[in-house]
Length: 383
Image (cartoon, rainbow, N blue to C red; front, side, top):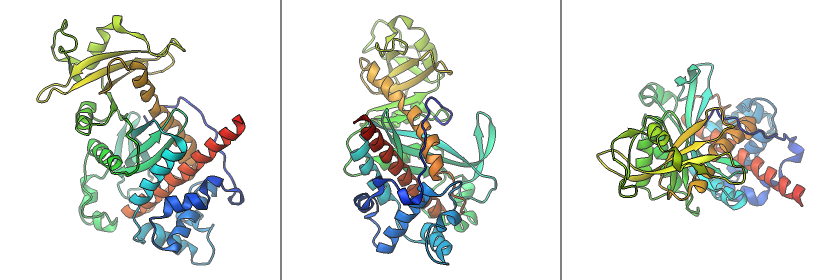
């Protein structure tokens, strides 16, 4: 998902004097109401305003310059890195606010690489990419997305074994209950996290992370009862579901090979453009469990990669609806580049695990504010 660049959005930067009205008093009460002290609520709001207005990289020093007093830098550092406020209630409040204002269609879970020049920031390790190894952090983000906008609302920072053992654990204030794990385990944590957000509508989950085992993620999602669409590799083994297609054999076959062998069931998924086509084939997962799923083969002539394969628990007749969901990771990638990077989502340079989570939480709130402001501007323009 991180490499898709299908759309372009102009990010409008505003001086502090003309901050978006989306961060008004009512929004601040909803977003920061979990902070028990008035001083914490004020600092959270001012930090978000700094993320929206400070030019260039959003460091603790540059944000502190927006605060009053000679001790502002120390105060901001304490608020982000060591102050004992919880970030999850703010993330949940942001998700509910995004649902209210932006009408999202799905949860989208994807991976974000955060390059680092040195080894000291929490979670930093050599990260393999398609372009070679990059030194940095790998974060799994949960976004609420529609065809118009996408907003990050939760984050998992993948930790290797060395970050969960002393002395690095103690140095980075990594909590005892934080375990090292794979990207797949981060995705599972992300799903558990979205299930815990009170007051949210039941939305489908879209997972687009090419380096994970898509079949394992799809199997996990079947246990949640949520509708899902998960990107899978063409070599993923599947069998035709003979309970739904009894005239075919049930040999274990690669997903790409199976989709390629049934071209005659391909049809326009969106008659309005006549270009996007899709095949939805009833399949079952290989043993030990034979969960029924549907293999979706998406092809778009304007996409450089040509085709993508997905597993879903949506009905095979819902090909257009399923393909609509597969376009949402592109919206996430677009808005991450257009908004998140501009409000400092990747800019935290501290060594603290709590500091990283608090900064990225408030950067996600800043993204939400910018997205809400853009939505309101578009509505006003249409009128």
